[in-house]
Length: 161
Image 1 (tube, rainbow, N blue to C red):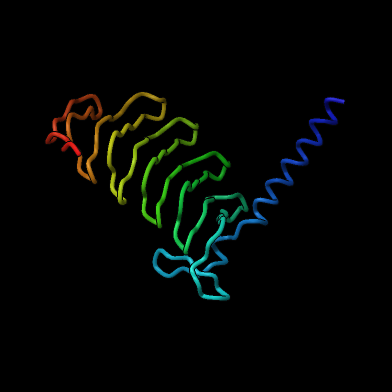
Image 2 (image 1 turned 180 degrees about the horizontal axis):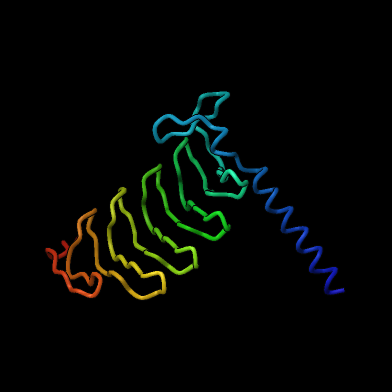
């Protein structure tokens, strides 16, 4: 009975993956003009769920386009299917949390973007999980005290908002 239930759950999950691919559009099927994706039939900016695949057929990235630009959470994958990077977009511009992972699923770095620039706390790690860097960004500029590969580096103080 348990095996039958597990079998049915497995089948339904495989179907859900196919349904996702069917309800999303392959980025390769869209036209691209700069950073805007267009519907090839209407030549209008595309809105909807999208994905891309590696040559081997596995999903390499997935997310949502709104008016042809990346919007909200966007995910990138390794060929193994493991998550490689998570990004957050607002009208095609990086805005919010970004995380990158090593192939062993350990966190490689994390931080936030504002208006397309690093902004706020940032941490980077070695492949085995040890801290490599920690500090703060302010619109793309390092500020305050940083721990960088075992040394403390002092940058100009971070401006208050």
